[in-house]
Image (cartoon, rainbow, N blue to C red; front, side, top):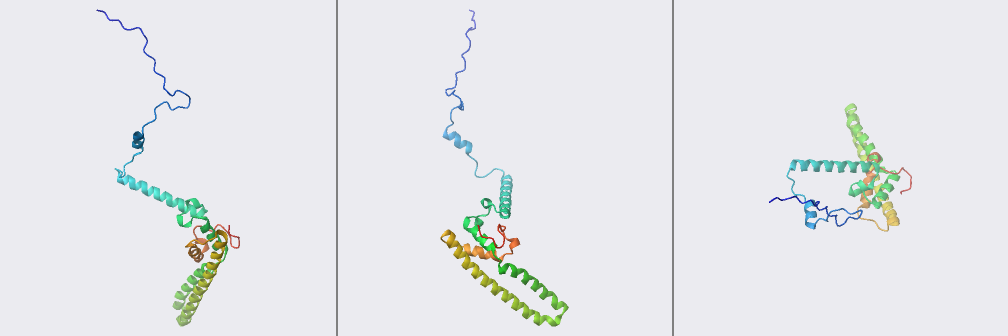
Length: 197
């Protein structure tokens, strides 16, 4: 018996069911397949690599936060500096000249002089120690009085603008007022004497 090959052409490929333009051309995957594709192990096999990645990520976040403190970009600032009320408090503090920011450099210079001068002139030791006590305690008293005025102003201005004073905002402003303006973070975005934004 002789068998002959069929001369009929092979069946053409069936057209996809969704052959209209814009279709993805394949069936939607099941929920089980989608979840399996997203699944990651809770504990990474290579712990050293995972630690390295975590360190890099934390370092990147710290750099972005530091840059935000310099430029005033609130979106990337640490949480304790975000929000319109905290921004307003910073502006109120930065617009005024605070006694504490002037007192601390002067007190530091005075203490250095009080340490060095007795080595040169031992007879002035009593006078210097008395003067140092007067200057230090007098400066601290002035800083406390100035902080009370700042506290009153912050409470008044925050109530006028926002209707209420969030807990911790006045302390946030007083701590900022104690710092030397040049070293404050976030950096001041307003000059002395300007109106707070």
